[in-house]
Image 1: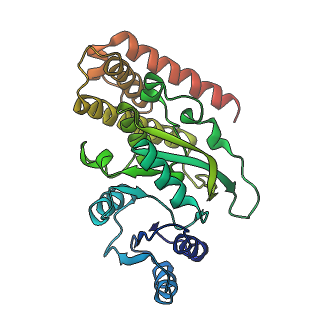
Image 2: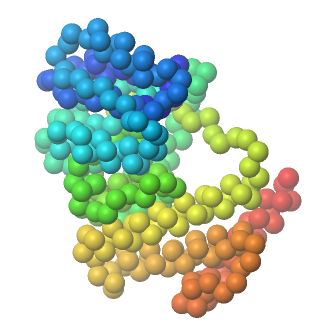
Length: 297
């Protein structure tokens, strides 16, 4: 379980992990240098635990961020299959048992499930995760360019999805968008069509950032994801003639040109030199989008 500044929710998450009804597990509670007392809550609960699972509690000396934290836990965990959990989500008692059985019967390297979603106020959430790609299709070409694959909080992944590829970028990308693509490259995904966690929906990004700045951040993240997927596809062994490589390169230029729209000086980018028509289309598309949004302000 990964935690960071989740003192209002972490107790329920820890108890749920300890109450898994299955053969003994290695359970690691890893805190990313919380400053709100989250780690002390974990230690207090674990100190009174007398159940069958093997429990380890660790805290990072400084905040690593989610992706580097994941990489550290991959090295720490003894098992090849890692069932991920967050400090504000509650696993059902049968979660680990269902995932382990699915892995043993299918060998899938990515196993994910449905979830019951709640807002931070305890109200039933939107279940918008069910609109993500993997709840309806594993089409690889669609996966290559999708930015909503599955609800990452429900996932279990095999270590090889980390170790067989280059490290996930430290910042600016969501790990499930990388791991989901890797698992689909290997045709190694299994969906458990049942809710196995209660998921606290993100209340969204608020604050003083302008819509334009947020849009550039989103596009920059999408470029990083496309570039990582391109690297992973090559690492997997796809040739430059493969349709997946071609579609990734095309979208790499497309998203880079859209990021350029928000730059102070557009200049002549390499994407324009290599693919001028695609670059111009990207700039025009983003200009039209920005103009449409401005009319609704």
